[in-house]
Image 1 (cartoon, rainbow, N blue to C red):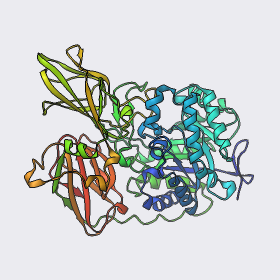
Image 2 (cartoon, rainbow, N blue to C red; image 1 turned 30 degrees about the vertical axis):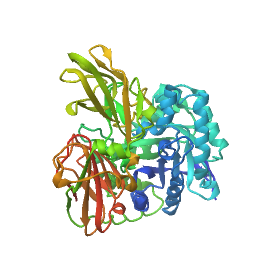
Image 3 (cartoon, rainbow, N blue to C red; image 1 turned 180 degrees about the vertical axis):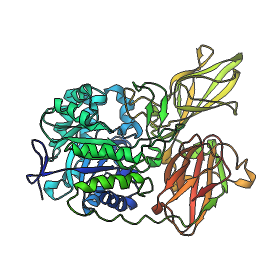
Image 4 (cartoon, rainbow, N blue to C red; image 1 turned 90 degrees about the horizontal axis):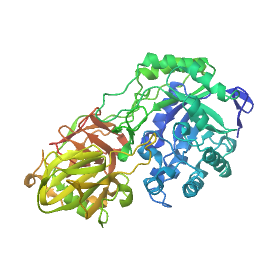
Length: 584
């Protein structure tokens, strides 16, 4: 048992000054079988603490139905075994380039902009969630013999709102739930962000990637006393589909890290190890300085150009950071652990069965909606996945432009069963006019909900309507196909066709099944040459979204997912299939 407190200028452990050398590692982005290795990598880099967010939507998929809340506790226990303190950031909003910033779709779908405010209905849900989650944290606080030394109230609220009553409620609720370690907030080092995001009596910290001296000067104007800490030292960055890869020079990042420590401050390296957005949980952003432009979907990899890469290996940045951090170590740094086992050789797998999207939807889809206007994903209860909208253009009538308003995010459109185009803009028109009568289908995929900025919580799917000339087309049938529906039992019911008699490979959208024979299992990369866009499962584990637009060219496969011998691969292709997949 120990006491961790805030001094006039320092963090104090049993009254003695300590410096926090922390690194972000999100338990939900790393396979549990690899937590121990990744935590050991943080220790070897010279860190004494690990930080993690907690995504509400991962753990409460429906109101009052919880999924593996104990994962956080198991991760904190692993951190303690690794000799690391722990900082927990439970939100309720986390950003983190994660779907909807961690807020459940069923919550934002109902409340919209009322989230992250002192709205009574929103606070009821926050209260229930925190009282379910926080026992995992409270029992593992340092004053109870555990590793947890600090807990965050909300997250970067000054970048979003100014409801100080809400922030005060979150801080008070954390304490009411039994949190006794220091609370903190984190915001950008700008006056309006610190003004909007700070709570009297709660430690304020700042987030930045460079310019430590200037950032801490701004913080001191708002908080004259208390320890200085950069809660997110951005050592790299994330990437969007279709963009160039993100990266930062190791020497530049190490110099910026050294400046933080030279200021006498503590630091949390964001990210120390980024991991992967398994399961299609990657979020999205709106382009532009005000974050209100076109949608930019985040890739599956969360490598972040971090010092420990997506596969858990040390990079040039790891060694540069280790050289900086060892100057502040109380003794010799631990040795770098050996790398995880790697797949022994390249393995190819060819589809042996296929089912068209309609057939998959018939078996795994949700109940069909029948109404006058298109429902949003939120109204259908779809978090990650796609929705088929089907409607009839009446006739006879001459060809007119077919227009979709309020489209989020990407629709593959069929007219009388023939592909007619792909729409991506919020207000989009098919390339060719449509005559009536005609049956129109729009297969719309959510590419990730916005996780940051004023459009947080916006609805997905067709949120406006479908117009023929200027006339709304009423009468819509809609059916969702959720990522979580792809279980072993569910897929076993899909009416597959043997590939030799089906119009594949090199064919159209559908679910493809294949087997990869492995001799020498371990970490691997799954490559999909010639495939367009969709999701991949390996032995029932969803590796995430792939998309041929890059920059990500393969999906990371954790070694614990692979097994010796036969490994079943499912590929849900949404536009145009390739001939095979490869493990390397």
